Image 1 (cartoon, one colour):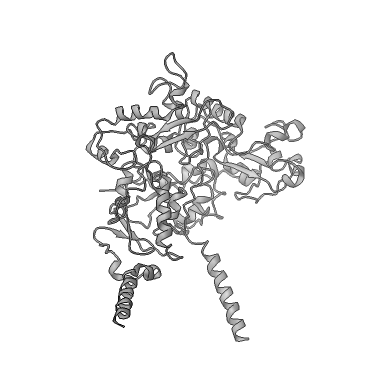
Image 2 (cartoon, helix red, strand yellow):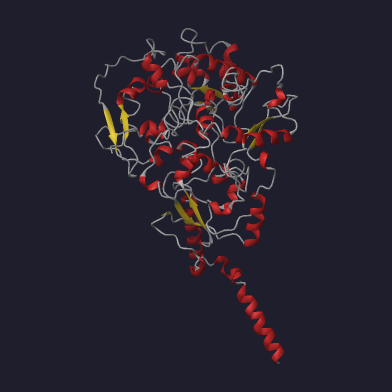
Length: 263
Length: 296
């Protein structure tokens, strides 16, 4: 009996160690392939498509972010910011929910038109859709260049007025009071000495996000109330909720760690 | 009896001389472990989860990692057409011709080329529209992708790779030489000012982040069997490239966060092997990273 218990304990211990080994800050050198600019921010939605016999939906952020704010889809329309978080089905779209709120024939092409199914339920794998690529380069031709991600400096494009962002849908969004308080810039001091401080600009984010996207779900509203590390960002938490897959990748260190180091 | 005794003593001596066989799994061969001075290096303490591989296997591995080919073919990348229907041979991209003029950031960060062979899907349409190769090969910065009277597609879609030898010899006539890889000492050429590669074509200032104090000293750590040390200098790499090329995709930023970092991974193009198998300098030159180890 005793040896039985001991062996079970060993097994459990071993399993715990095995599973814990995946949760530490490790990298195994797998370089994730850098996505081409027209495929950065591309999401594949496959919760129900393949089960119903259709290709999965390939959703490209760049074709939407040049027209609408992040807040509109993620707060008003209710899209989740994680994979598999939103159960969108054809019925919802036909009833004017989720994608169907805009893809109703008036704001954008209609989901009800059978000829349009293939525009989203695309048979081309990510990276090989030449039509999407052509459209991308046509749409972003006049936008200011940036490094990484889509190769477009979206913030600058919005500030320069090259793109005009729509923040509400008259037939869908609820009326909310306009939030006027600009909380200004926040400086965060990193733990590693010699690394420049992080300058976070509320203004640059509020133009796209409003307040609701980050507060209070991702970040506490109390000053200094959220403590996090860079590894959390790489794992998709805190800043990494947007900056990694969609907004711009976390490769441009100097963009946030921007405070000039005083001599 | 005395012959037997001599034989026994001799065989005992022989066996004790092969002490590496017994110390294979003994990481604390104290007298074999080189000393890493904390003043010269930032010593990283790595923990390895599995024991070291045998010397025989290690030797097999190292033989696969070496480059003994022609010097003008080191750093060559084949760029195949993505639909495999082209009649032309794949385009041959020589790193050495471009290293003279551009640093790594320009192509790999600004123009969007992938660090993997076959990772960038380039079409002729892209080149003609001024993306990827076509960004410079448009007739202004460099020769155009379109065919002219004298030059055909075969300027890049080379059929006979021996033609590269002439180009190489012309370009590298005045460069300092060394023994391995493409036999050019790039670091020396850079520090002496013989080449002045451009940092950026988008007007970005590099390095995008000032190197923190702690990273200015070289790193050093022990390998699994603690007889070999590895030395890595950030300064020498930052003079060629920006942080974003290696971090965070190839190497973890967290201190000692890069795990299971061993020699086998180099063969697969992971970690250091991403550049130091085919592009930068080959693994023949052991002593550059492993002080005290003989080159192959």
